[in-house]
Amino acid sequence: MNALLVQKIEKEKGFAGVWELLTVGPFEQGNEKYYQTLEKLTGITKANYNKKVWELINNEK
Image 1 (cartoon, helix red, strand yellow):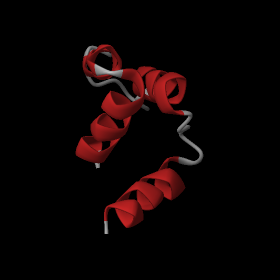
Image 2 (cartoon, helix red, strand yellow):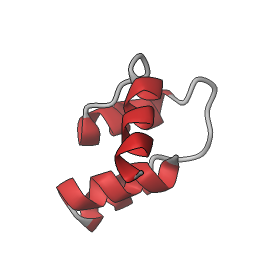
Image 3 (spheres, one colour):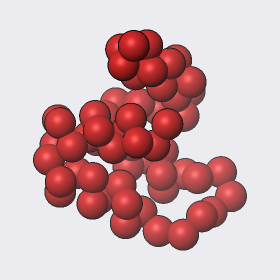
Image 4 (cartoon, helix red, strand yellow):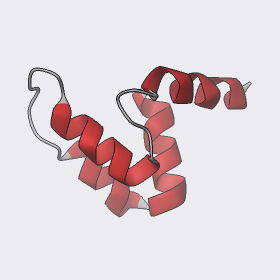
């Protein structure tokens, strides 16, 4: 899943966007920083994460 997200971010924001996601920090309960950064970069939120990831998967077929 993360590979598809990174691919999307790189396409839309370049490597700087990918680096921003990769440097979110260590794991934390609830992954709030991860989801905040992901929303900023892609518009994918914690609430719509599953739906958007499935869209990415289906687009790869």
